[in-house]
Length: 106
Image (tube, rainbow, N blue to C red; front, side, top):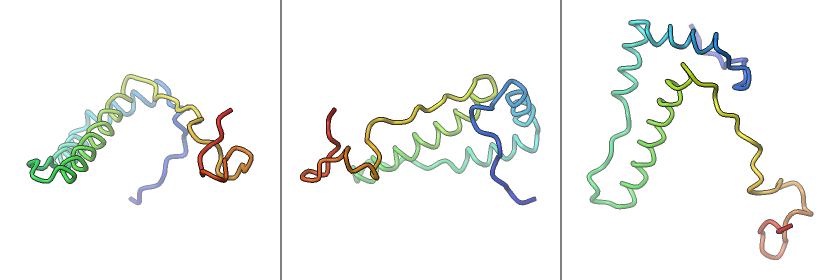
């Protein structure tokens, strides 16, 4: 079987999806696959190189967060991510200061 991208959006996640995911996680074959995925987690370094250790810790945190989010979906609605207002559209010239390449403050 070839993996295909899901057609549902996160906003369409419902209690039936959560139940099906719980059923899948309880399946013995999928349990083995999850054990394999958990075993493949990135490793923390010994701290001898501070920069490499910081990068490795970020990878470990991201990996753990992704797995936690997967398990959270068995009983929670996924969070909706609001449109970020941190930076205006790069295509909207009126929102950018050309002298500093910084967003203009309103």
